[in-house]
Image 1 (cartoon, rainbow, N blue to C red):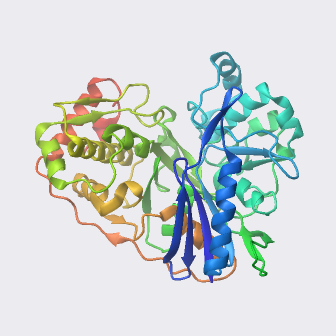
Image 2: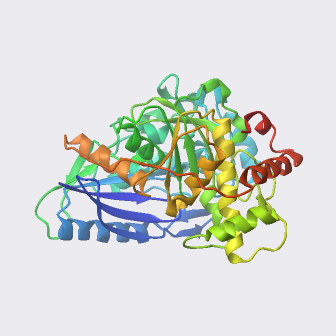
Image 3: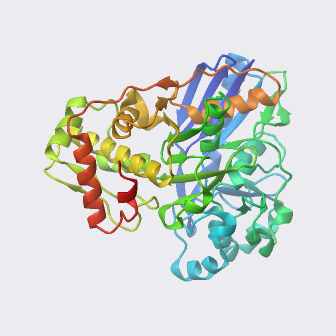
Length: 459
C-alpha cells in the first residue's frame, strides 16, 4: 500500500509518496502564492489547487497510491458553502486595522480557558475570523462550514466537511483544552452550528477518482503539522519526549510540562494532540528568522564559519519576526561585519540559542527529538546537544517529520502497519567557547529587557 501526503507549509507546499516501510518514494514541491485582494492578503487558491490536483493525479497514475492525506500549517481557516469558498483564505501574516483590532480583541477569551495567548497578526485564527466577520459579514452568513486549513484541502479533494481536534486546538482561541470543547468565543459568535462533526486525524472521510484511474482513492482527514510530527515519534514508544519541529516555525512541544508554568507573554500555549490531550508548547518563527539573518543561505554551513563566529563574538539578537519568547524588540547583529558563510553560521547559532531558551522555558528534561528543514546535516541538533549535555538528543531519520506522522495516521486508520525509521542518536558538536558564547548572548538579551526568566533556566 502507498499513500500520498500533501504537506502544506506557509513557505513551501509539498507532496510525498510514502510506502508502508516509511520510505519516501517520490516528492514534489511548490510555493503557495499570497496575493492582495481588496484590503486583505489572500491565498491564490486556484493556482495551488491546480498544482495539488496535478501532483496527486501523477502520484495515483505513476505510483498507484491508495489514499491522500493532508498535513497543514496552523493559523488558517476557510469558509465554504456546499461547493466553494465564500471568501478567499486569509494570509495569517497580516494585522487587522487598529480600530478593528481594539474592538475584536475585547472578545478574546481568557488564557486560562483556551491557553491561547493574545498574539499579533492571525497567529490566533479566531482573531482573523472576528476581523473578517466584521468587514464581510456576508461571507460568514453564506458559509455552511468553517474548516481548518488541512480540512479544507481534504474537503476540496472530494471529502466530507469535518472538524479535527489538533487543528482547532492549535492556539486558535476556538478551543478549551481542559473542557475538551469549543471555547466561549465560538458560542458567543454563534459559530458552533457551522463547525462540522469531528473525525480523528487520518480517518477516511470519502473516496475519489483521479485522472484515468478507475480505482477509488481514499481521502483522509488532515492534521496540524507539528502535532503530526509529535505523533510520528510517540507511536514509536520512545518514552517521555520533547519534539522540536523546525520549518518556517520552530515548534517545541513538551507534553510533560505543567500547564501552570505557561507564560502567555512568551508565545507559550497549549496545542492539542490528535486524541485531544493538551500539549504544552513554545514556538518562534525560526525558519523565517534564519532566512532573514543569513540572507537566504541555502545548503551546508561550514563548521569553520561556526567556530569563527563563536571566536569573534558575532551574534544575532532577537527578534527578526513577530511572536516568540522574546517579542517586541527589533532583531540586530552585533560584532564585526560577517561574510556570507559567517552570517549563515550566526543565523544557525541564533536558532540553536533560541531553541535552548525554549527548552528551558518549557521545562524540558526528557529526551529531545529535532526534525525538519533547519536540521539539515544534523548541525542544529549537534549544537543543542553540546549546549545541553544533561539531556539525550535524537534526530529524525527524515527531515519530514510532519509528513511522516501524517502518513502514519493515514495507514493506521485503515489497519495497515507503517514502519517509519527510528530517530538516530546525536553526537554533540565540540566547538570551543560555545558555552561562553551562550552566556554572552543571554547577557546581551537580558540587557535589552527581554530575557527576564532566562537566567534561572540557564545551564
